[in-house]
Image 1 (cartoon, rainbow, N blue to C red):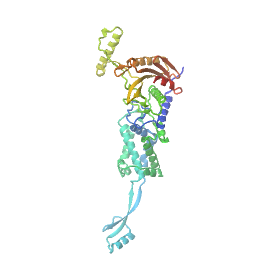
Image 2 (tube, rainbow, N blue to C red):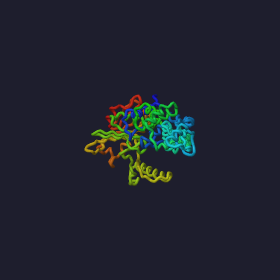
Image 3 (cartoon, rainbow, N blue to C red):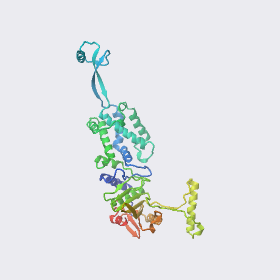
Image 4 (cartoon, rainbow, N blue to C red):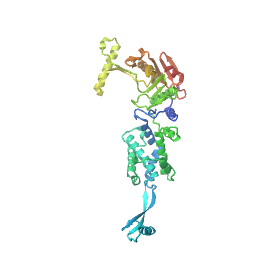
Length: 439
């Protein structure tokens, strides 16, 4: 008997797909698809996500671990300052300079002295680069890791975050520098740090450059791709991982270079959208989008219905009552509610207006078992029956309504009326011709 695709293989494929999307430059700044478990992290913008990825990278965590020892000795500049003093002397007397100043004054004044003092400056480009880098890491750790508790943040426990903040705040050398918000680290500053013989400055320059490239969307750069591969956050549940694999496979078949991706998080709207002059496509994952999949409880009395429908209505109302009493949640009076794993809406565009043309509802099962496939078909059949748009049942409208059940049984394609069963694995993928047929 064939076994399911191992989660490790799915994780590898999904991570590679994401980095490919990024490196090919088809992702917009405001809408980036990423493999994030919605139950663990809600990401609302690309900048926040990329900052989290940056501080999770091994290069950053290793730099922070070494920083306390390396910051005990920092580079500083020294220079001699010659000043003219009268009466008292605070520095070493520069006698040649003193004679010259007294001569220029036009009279012999024994209280006039030229003195030399040694000035030590810590505010140099190399130290500015280090402080700016550490300030960025401290900000992200404080915002994203201290107040939350996620499995993927093991590199940043409360203790390690507190230690980093203490080092940044109490280091006497960093304290001599201005607040990072008050200055700009220039390319010349980065060049000076990179050319330093000290590992502290070389690494700080490389990481700060990487951070800027990451936030600027320079995904084609090798260092940025390496970081993305290393810090991909994937779900621990194999079933959700398979769902994401199928979603990315579908997006790959739809992509014509105009597809734009968004973060995968609850309430984020369409994960992807595609527009041409004639057509608009919206892809929703774990959301219904413009499709309504809930049915209010009918007002009729159960006894007016024939069995077993009367029993089914009685059970729905009893559930609503028990739920309110035991869980303390208000009565919703819902007879049915469903949520497919995948919703694809295709709109026809004309004269600035768009009308719904096709809806594809998908249920994804990480299985090769026929019993689970049968359950998926049952769920999909309910979706197709109850799906509505603008208060109209899609099955009774002019909208083309399609259903697809996807399992991990590679190479299978079964069709019956408007329902298709696809068996996919990383080695088989989703046939392009099937997607074209469905949407």
